[in-house]
Length: 223
Image 1: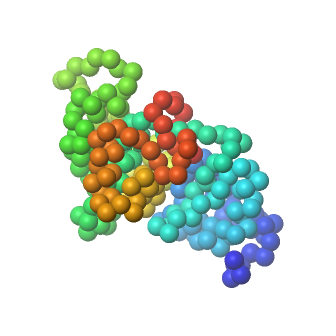
Image 2: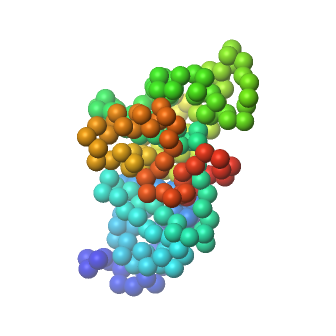
Image 3: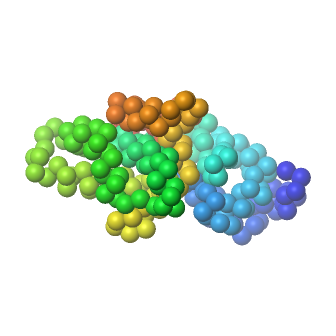
């Protein structure tokens, strides 16, 4: 990267942005254009930091959609996974992100729109059992409340990872990193329809992950 303001790895690490950027990347967060100077720092220091993170068994990935993340290639930083429920919510948010109507609203959606899309894709029974796999029986009278609570937990986890911003109890801002959930169908003639089918069938895969952030049985999610 010939136009970088950093002429050495030492200079890049000495920059005031490095400590916080390094911490959030290691925690599995995606850093996008919306993150301002943190994103600009990564663009500037990318060539130097790629080698730095490779020594920890990680790849510093930049996507043309406008975000960075660390992809573990080994176990040195741990290989934690998202739950099936978190994957389901993430894939449904990706569908909403790709919806032209969402673009017209600046990437903002209501939480109710997410809940309605989830119910429409899977139906209440499948949705409840996906979000609460250990619960063998449930009372239909409290199913809606249960779904709302589990979706809320999934949203908080996805917000921690930089997939979505929770603006308030009713409104969400969708971030470009959600396109990672659409990677398995990217390039297909009708990616939206293909992703809908993945969600409806419960096929929870996340992009290039071979166990990274993709799974149905893990208790501790992460990068």
